[in-house]
Amino acid sequence: MIKTLKLLFVAAVSSAAVLFVASCSQKPAVQSVAENDCVNLIFDTDMAPDYDDVGALAILHCLADSGEVRILGTASSNRCATAVPCIEVINTYFGRPEIPVACVRGDAPDRTTWHNGDRWTEILPQRFPHTIASSADAEDATVMYRRVLAQQPDSSVTIVSVGFLSNMSNLINSQPDSISSLAGIDLVRQKVRRLVVMGGAETSGREFNLITDSIAAQNALNNWPGEVVYSPFELGNAILTGKRLVESGITGSPVIDTFTMCLPQDNSNGRMSWDQTAALAAVRPDCGLFEMTRGTNVIDEHGVNTWTPDPNGKDLMMKLVVAPEVAAEYLERLMLHQPVQKQ
Image (cartoon, rainbow, N blue to C red; front, side):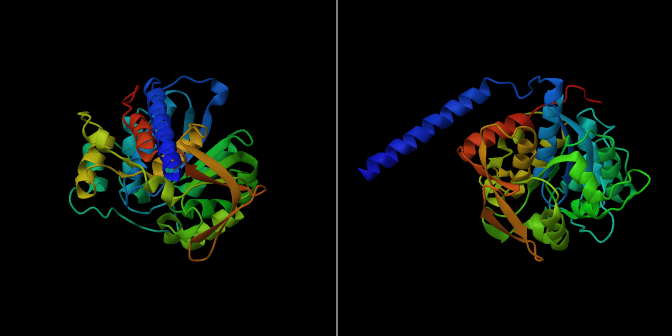
């Protein structure tokens, strides 16, 4: 009887997955939306150690082409010299070279890619147009955040962080200046609707984004004056994307080129999709791929997080509710999107 129930459950899940894929396939990746439904967003990334950041930024540009999101700024939490040029390459490719690109300052991480063959972080700036030669030449990220936030309506900005929390910590620590009379934590409280973070574990654990600059993660996330949504390691780890991109035949794309260079060094069937899930949740929280549970996430001085479910908690933890293959196809359809206003 138990085995029969398990088989029925598996069959039901499989049928639901098929229906979900069919539903997605009938909808274009780019969909028009009402102006008041557009998400105002700042993208914060450690662009370089891994290339899921490239996929995440591609997804945001896809959703920007449909009017679902307005990308107000992009920032690197990584001092790696090629991080900012790579961000600018992608913004320019998708026809938005005007998007501000800033970089962390101070005692922050400097991490390059661990890929030793074709080093995509060096090759993209050689192949594609950009104007900022090195991350050190970019604007101070804290200044960019304060300026952009000060210009926006109250409670209107979503920040998605898919890297180190260095910029978030610097922002809430910032003091009043000529841009705004508010201290950073008060500026965030007034202007930011929510922060979406790729980081941490579902219950407790050591995850790269949080432990690399652990003191910044502890300060930013424990003291953030508003809602924080977490896409944990386990969620994106189960979703392999990139194979369809490599097999697409699309040329002249920094997104396709990156996956084509890197997948052979990892797994030809795909790379984990940690950052893409956070980017998607920031714009389409009701996409059907995951559910969110409320609770409280506490980060210690080593960057280890401890999640406690609590219906009154200020934080939300994402959990995948479809088969990983279904989520992969959904994400890849967005990542395959080609610019409608290419420069």
